[in-house]
Length: 321
Length: 229
Image (cartoon, rainbow over all chains, first blue to last red; front, side):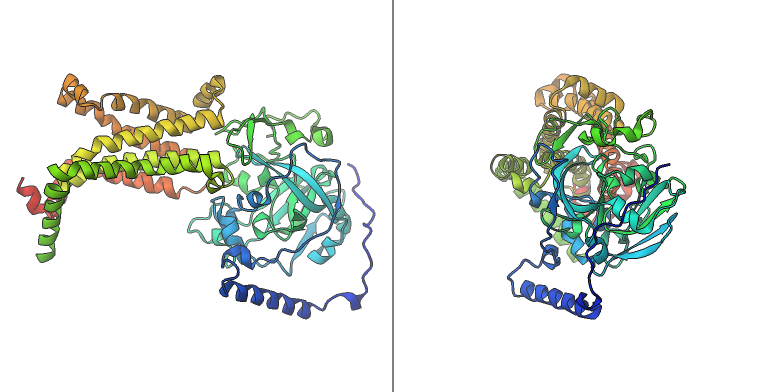
């Protein structure tokens, strides 16, 4: 088994005196929220959910090594057509409902088979080397987008906790707050909450695997998984869990929420593969939104064969769907 | 009872005046325009305002057309029970039109799927029908609608004879049932709407059951109207 020890990233040292005290920071947030509410009531902004979100510019070095040939999807589209069942099952529900999620302060509990388990604050993670990368995004429902993510490679986060040799899988857990997420309040739970997803450790450590904190040069909108989410561009979109609160390094393969709900439809790997159909629809082609016609041929591993094919050499991709 | 009296009067007025000889054609034209409205709006959006259709316009179009197909089927199935419970006999004049609208929306729904999702790749389409139960259900429901649409004219009623024609047109029950099943199987997780549709279909079947129909009629506030006819 390969060792995934990575030198701590070039974290700039910050003196304690430079850090805004938490209560001041929180006060400022309250003030911001109050200001937004005021402008909304004054009729300057639509009193819609989006108005209440705080989205700020986020600088990141552009990494063009994985640039797809297609231009990024219109931001308006990729922030209003989302699957985020914690806010409802329709595509428009997340954009309408997700503002109720509190995304600051935020931290991720990182535990399991690691030498240094701990809770990591978002602020610390934001200091990891952020890059902008434009990735194709392929949903299992046979539509796709092109998204300019901002994030850091997952392996940088792993380096902070030093996974042991027993760590063979990683489980990601999304936030589940009933009071803030309408989709969690349905009489019958739509999925087994909280939402969980899993990767094999070598998949997680692949340089393509991002922890994303922004898109389109700004912090993430809530409906896209603020404040921090996973992005695994060669797998179907549902593998890229949103709003992550917990990461566990495990010895055993975890079972994801979707696999639990329908194990013959959503397998552990869920690699984009035109040769393996979803039981209810073909995956041969896809619709690059907002196109009317599903005329795009779906590529194996969503076009990232060069980067990830070696992870699956000798594996039957039909059996391990 | 007084309120029952007014209900009865209202029902009579609808039957004899609103849907009577002089007004019926105007009401029919209005209902026709109303039924056409969802499709016209879709067409307008495709041509002039694609943003109104959301991030995935093709999915929206197919979805809306399919939903209206089911809704017209359910409306069509409600006409006979409503007629027999309220005594508004002229409601029957709208049944064919509603049924044909269900068929028209089904055609548009199928066409949109064939074009947008499958780009008329016939091999893929056949594979889809064979491999996927929900596509097969939709396809079967559509095929069953064909003979009903064809024999919807007065000429065909004569040719077949009333009894045989009525027997053939009982196909509408399995059609509605299969159409709802098609919707049910397609949904990924949230079954609210398919369940509502299924409940309505069941209700529409139950009220056709003789003993229940008898009970309903006896307790209908329009009892007097029905009895008088």
